[in-house]
Length: 252
Image (cartoon, rainbow, N blue to C red; front, side, top):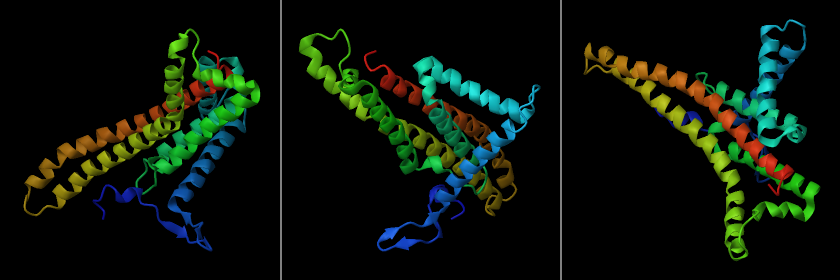
C-alpha cells in the first residue's frame, strides 16, 4: 500500500454523515479544502494586519500576490476587468495554496481530483455566461460570430465557436487535474524506487548504490513539482482572465 502511487489520491471518510440515501460525509478532500481556505486566510491576514510604510516579509508577499494577479487581469481584460479582481484573486490563491499543500508528505492534493477542478472551471464559465447576458443581453451571442466572416461560412464558424466555448471548462479542469495527478504519481514512483532498492536483500550492498539515481531524480522532481504548482495556478488564472474578457467584450 505504501508503494502504491494511486493510493495517495484515495478519498476517505473522516466523519461519516448520511441523510437518507445522500452521503454528506466529511472526507479528507473536504478537510484539505478547508485547510486551503484557512491557510490562505491566515496568510492574507498576517500580511495585511500591520500595513506598515516599510512592509514586512509577509506584507511584501501579499502585495506581490496582489500586484501579480492585478497585472495579469489588467493585461487580459483591461481596467474594466478589475471588477472581477476579488473573484480571480480568490481562485488564484485557492489553487496555488492547494497545490503547495499537496507537496507535503501525507497531505492530500485536492486539485488532483477532476471533480474539484471541474467545479472551479464551471464556476468560471458560469460567471462568464451570467455576466455576459446580464450586461449585453442577446448581444453576448456575438461572441460566437467573429467579425469579418463571410456569410456562407457563418454557420460553420459559429458551430466551431460554440464547441470551443463548451470545451473550455473541460480543458481548464483537465489541464490542472492532469498535471497535478501525473506529477505526484511520477514523484511517488521514483521515491518508491529508493525505498525498494534500499530494502532489497537480493541486491546486498549494491542496493544503496543503485538507489542514488532515483533519489536524485526524486529531489529534482520535487523542485519541479513546486514550479508546476505555481505555473498551474498561473495558467488557470490567465485563462480565467481571458474568458472574463469575453464576458466584458463579446464583440472583440
